[in-house]
Length: 177
Image (tube, rainbow, N blue to C red; front, side):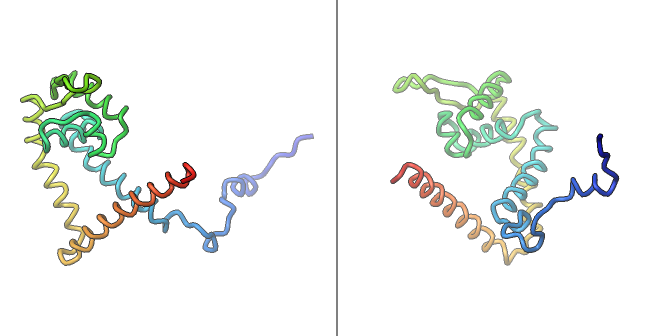
C-alpha cells in the first residue's frame, strides 16, 4: 500500500527546518558571504559592459587590465596580482593571444615561462575600456557618501590584510606548524 502526500505535506517537505532567528549562523548576516555577494554583483554588472562591447570574460578582463597597467609580465605574476588561479590565467592568455590582443616572448632565463604584453590592438582595447571602467567605478562610489569613502577604503584594506593573515594561519595549522 502506498500513501500519497497531500499539498500541505509537500510544502512542508520544502520548508527549511532550522532555528530561524535562533540559528547560530545566519548567511545573510555572515560577513564573508555578504562580501562575496557584493563582489559578485559588482563583477556581473561591470562584466556586462566589457562582455557586450569586447566579447571577453572576467579572466580576460583582468589579464588585459593588468597588462595595460604594467606593460609586460609573466602569467605567474599576473595570477598573483589579480588573485587568479594559474589555469584561469593560462586560458585567458590563450584566448587573448588567439584574438591577437597580447603577444608572448620567451624568457631566456627561464624557458618554462614567457613574458606577456598587449599588442597594439590590445592596447587600443585597454585604452578604450579604461574610461568606461573608471566611469562605472565612479558611479558605484556614488552610493557612498564622500565623507565615508576614506573609511570604506581603510575597511577594504584591513579586510584584505586580515584575510591574507588568516589564510596563512590556517595553511600553517593544516601543515601542523
